[in-house]
Image (cartoon, rainbow, N blue to C red; front, side, top):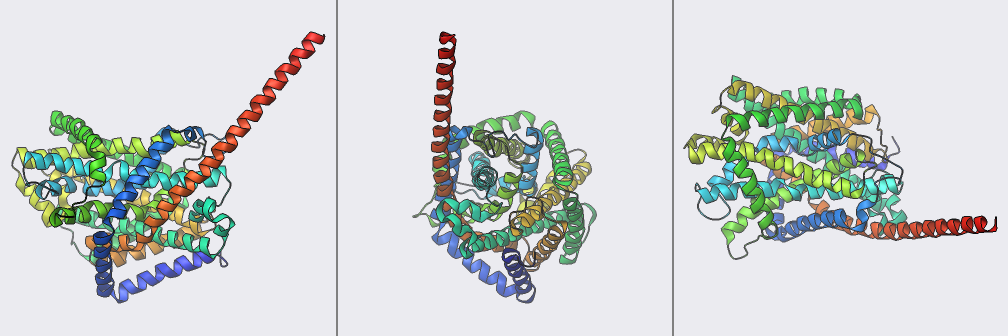
Length: 520
């Protein structure tokens, strides 16, 4: 471990980030905001184009001749059942974000839509459409590309479980050189910061819920205490292993999430929720291409909305890509590319659509149809209280809020648990079963980084700093797409030659047996 340059360099960067954040909080926050404004103003086109490329690549691979290629040896089969596999990738992916934005984002877009007048029926439709767009196929395509490449090169080509392995078709053996090590160091650093942002986001919502329900002080001290408790739990879970801690918690998460969805579905406007799901899914599919590249060069107001929401999301998903991709790859060995893309891209997307249709649809019904505008005001005044304020309009609101707090906490533990596992794997030469010592060390680094986010300004700092840190990775993701295609093309050619040779051998064997029968 002492000779591991990736581990030492990435630890140094993380500790440097924590040190600067504690000592120069205001300077860090100001600099990050300046850089972020520059990125989303001048490179919005690049983020949107990249997101579209990832979706196209996933769909192409699913329906192409490469879909039958297995992520592993031809004899390998999946280690996990499809149910547990989907639960694990969903919980390790964006579970925390779904709970945080379930009510907040649809209502935010309803009041201030990208175009048109807010507070109208059209605004409600646009709000749901953009929520589906931001949380559907596009983010999962980013995770799917990363995970597919890692699983392919690890389990089929026998390369280390490192981000640099994705560049083997481009760099060759130079992935073991300083170039490859630099890629791995950047990926580990981005992963640590991305997960710390998730921990910070969850902490803010948990603190908001405790304050709303029982008057707990909404202060940094309380938030640090929540982080300390969560860190203790996810380190215990992480040390228990992949098949025990993460798998068990993921299944628990899905059960609680399903119970909450079912409760609101039955207590809320059930028929309208189904209408929202069907109509928004249809309009999303129809307008997907237009929305994915929607920029307004001659309309500064609408363009600013796209930059602050869509471009922000695309950049934010990049901070999660190394972590979620690595984790998804680790649990996807033995699946075919077609099965993998179907499971990672489409199934979680459909579950996400159901989730937002229930919570977002019910929230819009309360505000738009029933006139409870105070709910929309709560979202704009303190976004961390949105979900709990929403529950107050339903029977058994306290029970629903407690269940939501438990769900946020378990999603948080699962994400951090998965992250410490991935960080240990990436920083230990691709070791698929990293030691508890390394996982504990990364758990403490994540906790320290999340405290920096909170000291630097809460939610805005979480969003800003994580995006700025991950910005170089967007370009690397585009190169990864080329690398995967290049490798698959060669693999497909070799597989065709093997099949052709096998067929010729079978034909020769048939002819030989036929000749023997005739001679006898």
